Image 1 (cartoon, rainbow, N blue to C red):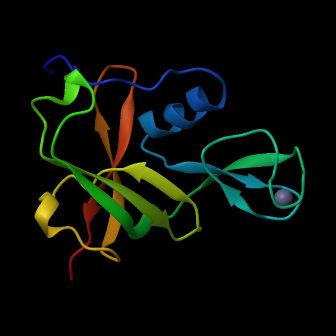
Image 2: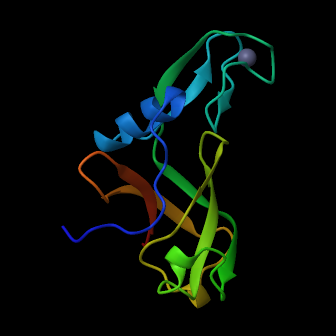
Length: 137
Ligand SMILES: [Zn+2]
């Protein structure tokens, strides 16, 4: 594995849990035990009902491109060699939105509403990032 040079998530608290599941190939989100609402990014309290009780619940991994932007000029030096690249917000079937990228689609080919499926990219021994791939057919 070549050394990964882009910024990585900090593994602490709920973030460590989230990425721990990703490392196992599972996309899990918090789901409120009180009202059933899904949420992401991870946080303590349900914004719908105020409950502190929740469970890490397996996502179907399916969603669609909610919106995206194409970055033409890197805003961080680590991304100098990556431009142009697209950043996408994927809306999952469960309703939560994930900031990620669609790995196998060129920036100019992205479309809002494009169906996608989660995949995981092992970028270090500890971290696998959730990415998305286009669903065809
Ligand atoms: Zn709730």
